[in-house]
Image (tube, rainbow, N blue to C red; front, side, top):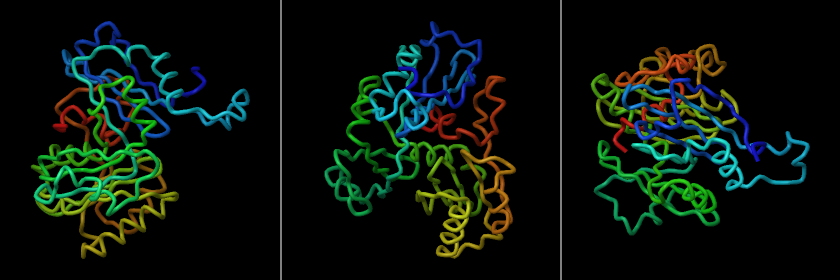
Length: 297
């Protein structure tokens, strides 16, 4: 069953002892094709490991030809192969990295109407269920859906009803990490594998947030410039902070410099330490995962 997933990234420090999970925190982010987690040693106040586990593409495995790996099969193979994921931790945080989410201001939000709010922006597919996160710092609710089969699979390993949306972590952590440094409008671009999140903080308030699908770097640049122009921001004067799956020297970064004069990479959460293994990563990488414990969700 180990062939149901591949290890995309393995940065586990030898100092981590699976018998000591009671002194650690586990943060996990799921998507429909991967599971990524990191472990925080509370005694050392240090992140001691990170792994990214990718759902196998059956087209790459001859022995699985003609078969489809279900999401429950994927998770079962992961938890069977990595037993400390199911261990008892002092704190556990779980998030879903779906592509569909929408914000509703708290004064306009009624819990019984969340299905209608969500349907205004998206259509539900199959057995999707609508959930919501309360973002206290923004005085807003983040609505999102999870496919029923994925929600049920996750609930086998983690307490049901405790999963938040990854974009909620992103918004809350930008507020925590940058609120004392945002004195004028600034745009944050968080890159994932096939989607990116765009947030604009005007002074100390978030004035815009949206998620876009993309295939090519040109798509990202187009949507960024389009949004800025629609909101009457000048790309040559508005600072851009890059977060997530983006590195200096990438084609996307070179492209963005053509349109945005002030581009910088995000910083790590400086309230915690990081294993030497994790120093292989650039500071903006896995931004949501490393900020899960400190963002207040």
